[in-house]
Length: 334
Image (cartoon, rainbow, N blue to C red):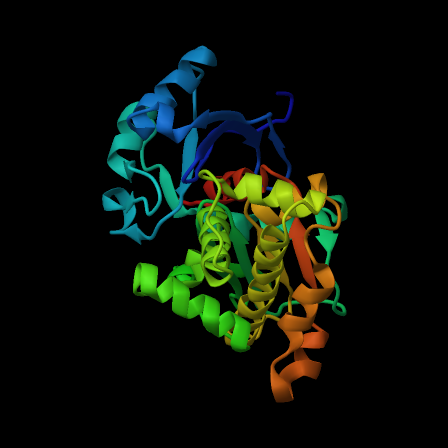
């Protein structure tokens, strides 16, 4: 690394993969190295995975550390911890401090970290999905489907910047908008009881949607398909059920994104992260139905015109959360 400033260990821990990297900078200019990806299932704890990463890097001197994970942060300061929602790892500031030798490391929700990255993203990092121009200084909303569904927001701090707010909106109730969605919801309720937004808007959710549609059609599910399998079948046009599952996913995501925009008054824009939608856009052109998403995003009765002006972008940069973490760590004053 050639950038001047402090060296920061950054890590973004999802339900499936943990991404580690070193960043160097002064809080304005940051140089981020390529991330190392370790599957969470292959390691008993964050400390184990972190130890492997640091050994591979030759145990470098670290000035600060910032780690994000999928789940709500409990406690504050050095007592903060995250019991992950879709992973067996429990992550604590105290354990990170021991593993890294850094005093007072920063622990954040993963979508709060992604939110911190938004002001630093460049046009090439984004894929536009309709709407008008963002209103400068207005709230910004984020959501993204992967192993689970993350939700966050950036709200103005009154001084020309923003404060990141983490939420657990993925566990809010799923709402149907037509008879077909109602039938799918009833089938899911029979299987799961409470049906959250995340129950359908995630990798496992796509599997659940596919299974519910098979049941409604009186068809057996062949084998044990993954979300990637269902995406492949839909993209290739091999399975009408898989294609409908993807269509339901796109429509429901639009509805949820529109609800989020209304909740926060997100005239600064809505940003879609996570692995699924950016992955579809990059690797399976046409699979993500942008027109359907946008229609459902705006289909809010009297507020349709209001939502039509709000821009939506997919975040195509896979290490965006690491950028947010690096900026958050370097902006701290301890």
